[in-house]
Image (cartoon, rainbow, N blue to C red; front, top):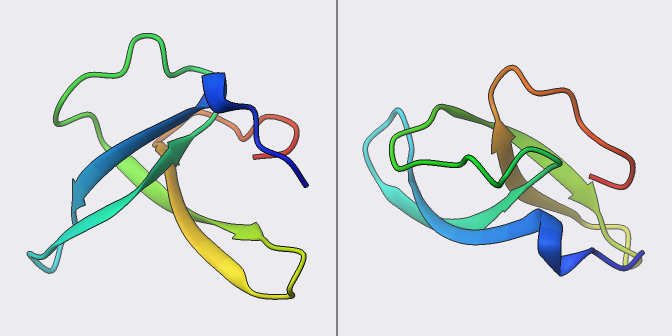
Length: 66
């Protein structure tokens, strides 16, 4: 599966537990993304069978391929 770079943002996400995680924010509604917007974890299936943790804006339904 190829990701559309216009629907991916590289960011540091502060986890509820405290640490920062360098990750991708994926989804359809990224044009209005602001610092401190709430996000939730999602898992992207890789061709290798692994699941990559990514994040998307909380409350925004996942789009196709995200």
